[in-house]
Image 1 (cartoon, one colour):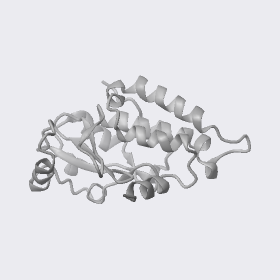
Image 2: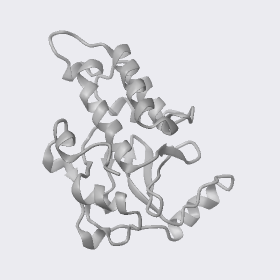
Image 3: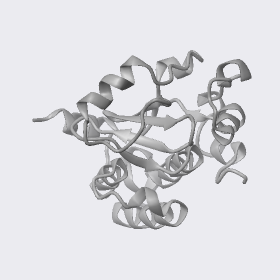
Image 4: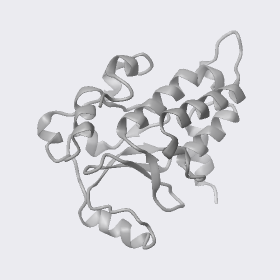
Length: 202
């Protein structure tokens, strides 16, 4: 099945040199073929914005499973997910974004919460990030146009697009995406910076 979003569409909102792709040598460790193909041919953005790629991913040094994830599993004994094939892709604010390299499912680990399903695949993760950038002029005053901004409309349209593209991703009431949408509604001034600062507060 073809990915939900392609390279040309991603390049419509992200500069080509900010889309992180990997070579076949690095990707050999990923068992899930659609995830391998996406990271080889399309890529995820590495930018100061909603998503920032993990430095190991940028270096092509894929660290899958192992002792580090066993330690995470021990911190969340009630978590139903098998972390043995997890790979960190990057983060949204202080929430880690991970892909299961066997199944292709994408998860989030919030700074102050247990892991949850973030997207059913890496292509829908990319689709959500693309949609957020398309709508940015409507919720980020610094990127706005002379016509003004419409944060509530942006939130409404994004929620509709997200649910239509990946309904399962929006079933978790504490999903990272709902945190993102709250900041869209509150009319960002400096992108993800305000989200990071908010999550640092006790």
